Image (cartoon, rainbow, N blue to C red; front, side, top):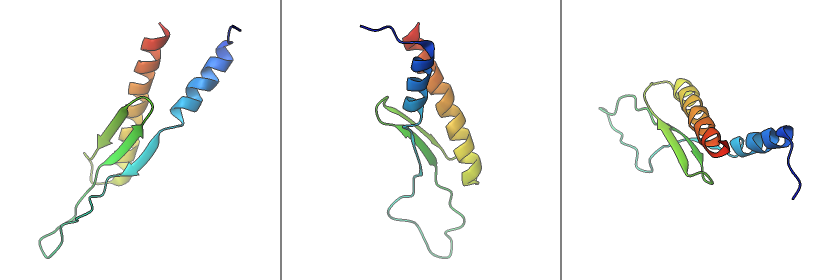
Length: 86
């Protein structure tokens, strides 16, 4: 079996990181009416192969929720990768 170079390993890790899916989790039945107000929905970053799902709905801004979700995903992903490469 051929030994892989560090560059090949890094490329594989980045390819695995890029398989994440980012979406806003909007429920099928949205509340409505006069008293509905402004509703925020969580942003979800999911990686099916790793079984990793991060949902952030802390801010009213979807952009801020997305940024935080991606940062948390990167931290968790790096932790998983570092744990498996030791």
